Amino acid sequence: MVAPERVASIVRVLIVDDSAYVRKMVTQMLSRSPFVDVIGTARDGKEALEMTALLKPDVITCDLNMPEMDGVAFVRAQMAKRPVPIVIISVANPSGEEVLAALEAGAVDFLQKPTALATDRLLDVADELVAKVKAAGGAQLWRVPPAVVRTADKAPASGVSARLTDILLIGISTGGPQALKTLIPQLPADFPIPVAMVLHMPVGYTELYAKKLDELSHVKVKEPFEGEVIEAGTAYLAPAGRHLSFRRAGARVVAHLDVRPLDTPHRPAVDVMFQSAADIYGARVMGVVMTGMGADGRDGASWIKARGGQVITEAEQSCVVYGMPRSVVEAGLSDATASLENMFAVILERL
Image (cartoon, rainbow, N blue to C red; front, side, top):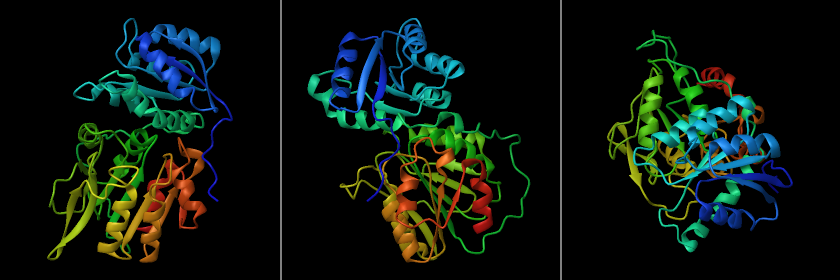
């Protein structure tokens, strides 16, 4: 039996939103779980700072667009005072800049608020909200090291070679935006194999995130397009809403994007990418499963292992949520475990 992800027996939650109606609805959604206790509500970031100091919640849910102090400013201020797991619940702005800014400031997760505030639409996301809040209740914010910032436009040649591996795959979810900004900028410009990544994000955010990660990194970071040749020195981030898989095109491997399969909990799914890569590259695959809730990546890891490839998991000590890596470890599929700060070194050792 797979052990549950670490959560407090009762997660005490503060709800922050300038809409009284949304505060009421979020309270009702969270109250459906016996493991969640809403201990207070706040109308804006300024009031939330005061209530957090007074009530000391385990988790905070927070809107982005609020008067007095908006959500991004609140996340920054709260993290400077006392790190608390914060789940953003907001109608996304068209560019997604505010969501990514909140995640960069330390928010652990994001849930898209339905644009229509009808009761049935809000209740549609109740189960997802409860799951995210419970996972956030076990988040380890203080263990995430600061992101590595690129210091030059192009890294010097590193002499890194790959003897056993033709592609590096990364599957990641909760805590992923911060973790990838630590790991990917460590890759040298002449990294000898391509990198493919699945990060669970809502539709509309992966392209912008890839551009921001590209600005920090020596390798090129981008969303792949259908039929794009997969090349060394590039890190491909699967676009939200479509699975990333691989196909042979003569001597080359190209990207394939598809909404199918439709029955996966996530789209894109780590399992789909891992399985496809194992089918195409055989034993010359290295899969890395990092912080995130759930078990996406476990079944795909079994495909990689069955074909002779390697699987590395992030250590519990550095995961924001130790769910996805735990599922792989407990299934006996992990060849090595590494903390986020040591992950790049372990990848190089086994490349």
